[in-house]
Amino acid sequence: MGIRALYPKVRTTIANKEHKKYPYLLKEFKNDKNQVVIDTPNQVWSTDITYIKLEKGFVYLAAIIDWNTKKILSWKLSNTMDVSLTTSVLNDALSKYPKPEILNTDQGSQYTAKEHIDILVKNGISISMDAKGRSIDNIVIERFWRSLKYDDVYPSSYSNIKEARTGIDEYINTYNTERLHSALDYLTPDEAYYKGANNKCFDAKSVLLGVA
Image (cartoon, rainbow, N blue to C red; front, top):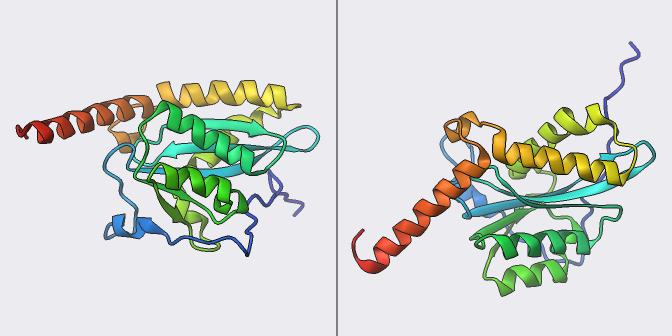
């Protein structure tokens, strides 16, 4: 029928057989519908890499999302897909926000690399990885990629990395501050994140003071 896909398929998850793989820790948060339910901000972060098609070639986008509130905490666009891409995004998020209890990734070599693992170990963050071939295990950021591409990247048809960086920055700012989510009681990701984070801080102080 002459039907073609809207986008090409580019592999962004390439495992290194020599690197240690970690178990998927989010099974314990699944409800009776097999959905991962995270109740508070900074309990679980999720991160991934995706490709962004340009007029000629591709660039790579890495981002970290808070599982509970869907807020994008950090992101970076690069013309290379090496470990410096993932470590820079992780370090940036940790410099801006309280560290998570768990970081979930796929089994790509950028995430199993010593440089990335060392940051998590140093900060006492539990390491969780999708099962092989199970992108659905990281569903929150996969859904964000889909929204980003269909709402922004494909219609915009960016010609170069500078255009893409500017456009994606605008999209993520709007997504975090203006986009209402039914799953968040129609709050924006920013509103849900800071409301939940403030409540969590208050509860922790109450327990320490013995007034909870």
